[in-house]
Length: 388
Image (cartoon, rainbow, N blue to C red):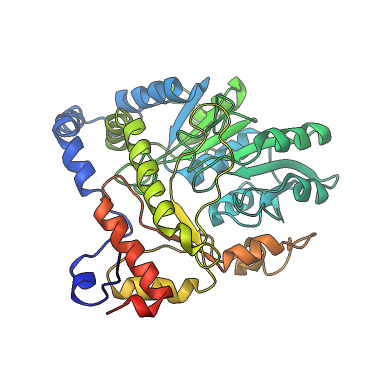
């Protein structure tokens, strides 16, 4: 396909995310549900939150699902409920969402970054084991973009050293390994329902997944501000992070279409990969580990690597294509970590990929035509002779 910089490229903008078509699909079902919520006057922690938790239990196989205000709160409360606090060290991936590490700080513990694996960007079990000390209490694994971290290997490390295993599975809805859903390999995991996630609300929402009765009970106490069920006694300082009813109704409505939305993302991701394949070495498409069990891969984002990442993003923006630089600065280099904890171990893989990765548009509203348009622009950028 020949390049077409100029009028044709300018005519088709591609936002990084759009949910307009999805909302049109969902609105006939969603509208009466929102009206019902408005009439009843119960706006948080009501029947729709209960239904969301029930349906997420059925979908993930978790013994407990506790819906909360957002994914970051979910991770903070999961850490607290697992007993993580002041004086503890928690190993985190050096390349991950800032919330993965800030949650450890909010829990009062000290995050210790360890390097990641090339390709999947998941926490490297060997590097995690190398930074364990007598103060280490837990390992936090993060599932990024399309696939689970190597949970079997990380669980073995945790077991060898008597550590808790927590999952930042905020992007992990629908991801499974050996039949086990993301978030259920250790003590607890979380889900994030940001609008751009595979299962997205209209704003913020999140959930804690766990098979541990005590962890679930403590998270339920925390999300309600520490208030006991009788409404008069406060048993803990609390955190006050409730999921609202409208967010829950949106998520229940969209959960009915989740598998088809996951499949749509997969088809579009494969289109990107097929059309970018011959640029390998210049633009590297996502590495996909062999799937283990059912639905091992789920594209929450389509992230490529390129040495001219910033220039490419600027070029695409000039033609109306949105991109996102995910985790563009490794955790040890964030100003929040200018002093301790720093790193005990070099993180060369994380440092390299942080300079190379960029997410291209990927969501169920995206069309094949738009994918091809983005690819044509990427190809034109790397081969100006194509442009005309």
